[in-house]
Length: 286
Ligand SMILES: Nc1nc2c(ncn2[C@@H]2O[C@H](COP(=O)(O)OP(=O)(O)O)[C@@H](O)[C@H]2O)c(=O)[nH]1
Ligand SMILES: [Mg+2]
Image (cartoon, rainbow, N blue to C red; front, top):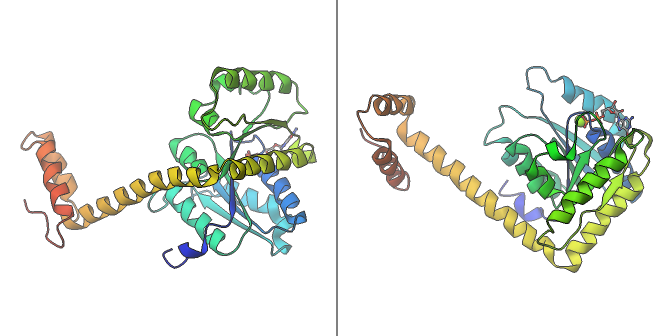
């Protein structure tokens, strides 16, 4: 990663998030086609909610995208959400950096918009597309506030279904309540991803936001904010790892037992450990 990092920073990273079945993979596939027509190379990272034990959906995404397999301009990487070292958001960020350094022009990251991990993942994107669908009890009100806040572009997919206008009205109502700090009003694009309808308009909306970032000099500001969080996270991981090494196996469980039995207080304990983590190769004494 150290060697690759200097070569990264050129790619445009686009995050797509939405409920399972909302059409993320189909949209990614369609957008990839458009970017390839523009002669831009594409990297796709599909972060899947499936555990590595079953892997069903991972395989599903691969099969759906097999159209692209013969095109060296498209690289697809599926990731399981469980068991990734250093956390999913961190690992996804690292994979994005690798693809970026490899020279991909556009990186599309598909993730299910459910947990904090997913919010963190889309935060690492330059542009975030939030996908909603009509019906399915999937009202805008039920969409997590965090997800609404990160949308740079809204997509109402499956607009061939009844209720697309209602979803649009709901988004507009929410938008009228609070303006964004950067002054951008996220456009709302209606699509039927399975037929490709509205996808050129979506690509145009994404390009519109890219242009806005450039014009307002916001790209760097966004990146600084991003790195502020990522640096803290990396530091936390590194310190924790160091503390674990110094403590040795089983020590945390032992200390937990001591605290539970009120033999020692957790405040002093943590203070002692934290003080010693920075102290070279000394081990934490009892
Ligand atoms: N009717 C309709 N079906 C769609 C549309 N977009 C995607 N689908 C279908 O919805 C299902 C889920 O799509 P998928 O892209 O796998 O959703 P994901 O789970 O969000 O990645 C698939 O069977 C798609 O063919 C759409 O605009 N209209
Ligand atoms: Mg999918």
